[in-house]
Amino acid sequence: MALLEARDLHKQFGDVRAVAGIDLDVEPGEIFGLVGPDGAGKTTTLRLLVGVLDADQGHASLDGLRVDEDPDKVRERLGYMPQQYSLYADLTVAENLRFFADMHFVARADRKERLARLYRFSRLEPYARRRAGQLSGGMYKKLALSCNMIHSPRLLLLDEPTTGVDPLSRRELWEILYAFAAEGVAIVVSTPYMDEAERCHRVGLMSGGRFLETDSPKEILASFPEKIFEVLVPETQTARETLETQESVLRSYPSGQVLKVACVPSVGAEDIERFLTRAGIATSSVEPTTPTFEDVFLSWESEKRDETASSA
Image (cartoon, rainbow, N blue to C red; front, side, top):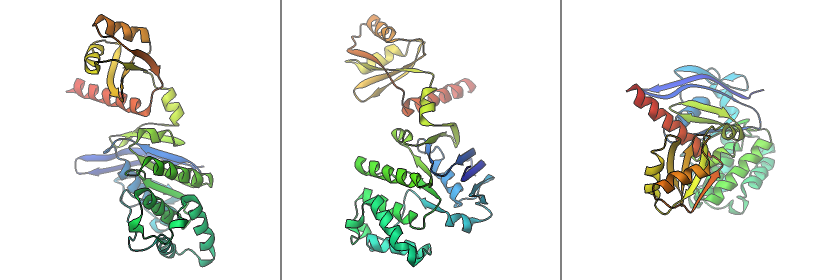
């Protein structure tokens, strides 16, 4: 049974439709990812779910309580970490945790166990006496996450928690999220990083304030209809111009040292080589590769541009 439910959420700012009909269900112990580029509507969706913004249409509920009707009871059951989460820089790690425990009326008898649990997850106990303003970016985010979990919420809402932190800290933050999920906490996390989509149990791929698709990462990638190749050529731009004249080639784009080429399913590596050879372009290698969420988004964005152009 879903812990968090949202039905037909809409939010508009002037002429901008920030959220355009979101339906969402998240179960206890599930990590649901709002995945998409900047401006997709992720932050506004989270603010509607937490009750910071009022929906123009639709509603959200947590544990059977409507966010718009019982905001105080709902907030007792959730933790919310916006992109710019402010801790008290002059207070130490331990003092910040105690302050948020006081703010959430955590009983004195429960604090020792909860603090020990959060220190275990965050590995911040050796830095308990360090001021928050002196923490690294990753440690600061882990402290902010701990402060949001001090009252043992049933739902955790995180807005791009790994933005601006180093790769090691990103991995550690996700390990903490997995640990919370294993204890039954429902988690909704927004991210612009396509590689993080694969870390979620389910994702909603967002664009233009709506879900383009909602499913497990494995199912979304398995159903992707295009075939993707990695092509190593000495002249990338010339190869792109050549390939994109072929009807069976949908798009191409540089990715690291290779050129990624999206094609219709019937195309094989030998076809790519033939297209290039006919144009006098030598290839070092042409290899099929597993599609990523970046490939999925680029496909949808390409379709959206084509629809816009055809309707103009």
